[in-house]
Image 1 (cartoon, rainbow, N blue to C red):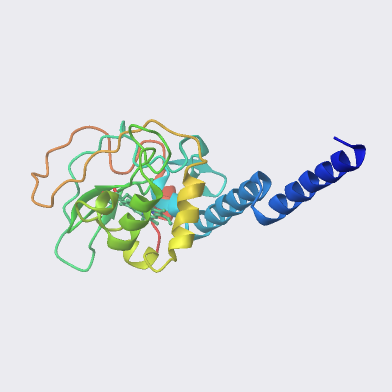
Image 2 (cartoon, helix red, strand yellow):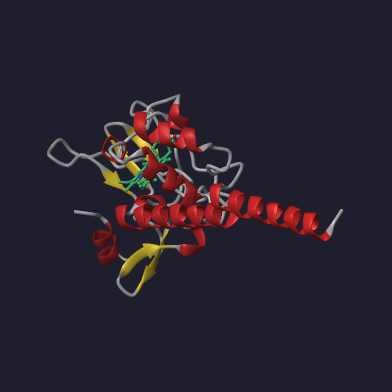
Amino acid sequence: MSTGKTVALLFGLLLAAVLFGALSPSRDDATRLDAARVERGRYLVASIGCADCHSPKVVGPNGPEPDMTRFLAGHPEKDVLPARPQLPPGPWLAVVSADLTAWSGPWGISYTANLTPDMNTGIGIWTEDMFVKAIKTGRHMGVSRPILPPMPWPFFRNLTEEDLGAIFAYLRTIPPVHNRVPEPVEPSAPSTHQTSEVWTGPDLDPAIRIAAVPV
Ligand code: HEC
């Protein structure tokens, strides 16, 4: 091949490479997109306050705050609660454990889910589609039993699929925590089904317990 032809061929290849690069998204763009999505999800989770219910708490300078070593890990499996308190007739409807991860009301007892990517006990095996469906339809894993109060899915369903997808993308990035949250308890279940420990939590003093209940 003559030098002229070689140069022309190389130039052609170079041009093709440049055009191809300009027309197809590069790996860098995809990474940037992912990073932007994760950041959007982090922002939504932080400002909506999923951790208020889904994280066990530690006591900080201003009262209970999410325990970052168990961030969004749901109701701790080792915190076995006693029988749920029976409320007298009147306007009070629900009772919540000191760390806001167990809720008792007319729906029975619900325990906040483990939202970390742990494969066995969190949402590690969930797909984005399952997650979006769960929030949009209020069904466990997007298909089965109704998701109980106080999970505010009837409000969260107003988020766009894009934002819900971003939340899911972010939840993929938090550390997995092995914590098997108990199944919810039917309202009709005998009130003595559980033993030991206390609804008020051992390490919170009474003043903080009151502060922990949202108004
Ligand atoms: C007011 C308390 C509260 C807040 C705030 C809250 N959740 Fe929940 N969530 C719950 C409870 C309680 C459950 C368990 C309900 C049940 O077992 O049916 C739950 C369950 C879930 C589930 C599991 C559904 C399933 O299929 O099992 C997902 C996913 C979830 N929440 C995501 C979120 C996300 C994401 C946020 C923030 C955007 C959030 N939650 C904020 C209380 C809350």
